[in-house]
Image 1: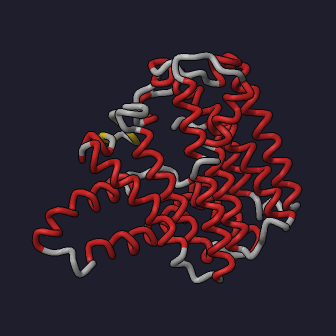
Image 2 (image 1 turned 135 degrees about the vertical axis):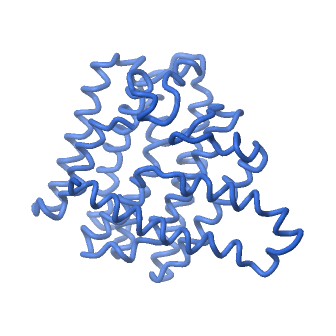
Length: 308
C-alpha cells in the first residue's frame, strides 16, 4: 500500500466511524418506533445508502491533512471532515436526479433515486445538507472555530459556491460557453468544496482568514480543484466505465461544454499539469519538510493519473 493509500484509508475510516455515530442516532430517536419508524425508515436508509457508498473521501482527507500539517494532529478536524462529506454526498444525490444529470449509476451502484424514488432521494439530500451543520457543531472545538467553520461551509455549498456552479452547469447545456465561464463553473461546482475542505482544516488547527496559511490553503485548493475537474472531463471521454462505476460520455449526451471540448484532450492534459505544478509550489511554500507534505504531494500526483 502506498503512503497516500494508507493516509486516505486512515482518514476515510475516521470519517466514516464518526458519521456512523451520528447517523445511528437517527434510528435511536424516541419517536422512531411503530408506524413512525415505518414512515421514516426509507429516508434514513436513503441517506445512509449514499453516505456509505464508498468513494475516496478526498475532501475529508484534505480537511484532516491541513489540520495535521498546521497543528501536528488530524483528530480535532474529524467532525469537520464528516460535515464536508455529508455536503458532498448531498450534492451527488441531487446531481444524479432526473431533473439534473439523470444518472442511473454512481460508484458502481444504482443511484439513490433509482433505489428509493425521486422524492425520497430529494429529501435525503436535503437532510444531509442540514445534518452536516449538526455534525460540525458536535466538534469539541471552540464556539469561535465552529461559527467560522459553519459560515465557510454554508457559503461554499450555497448560492455563491457549489450550487452556483450547478446552476451555471444547467445554463451551459446545449450551448457553447467561454473558457472564462467554464473555469468559473468548475471553481464553484467542484472547487468550492475543495477550498472549503482545506480551509476547514486550517480552522480546526486554530487558523483564521487573516493567517497566511489559510490564504495559501485556498490557493492550493483552487489549483487542485480545477485539475480534478479537468481530469474528470478527460475520464468522461476516455475513461473505463467499469473503473469509473458510472457511464462515460454523459457530458456529450447532455451537450455540455468541458475543458476537453474547448482545449482538446492534449490541451486539457497540459492545463491540468500546470495546475498541479502550481499546487505543488504552494505546498512547498507552506513547508520545506517533505515528509510533512508527502501525503498532499502524492495526492496531487494522483489527481493527474487517477482512473476513477
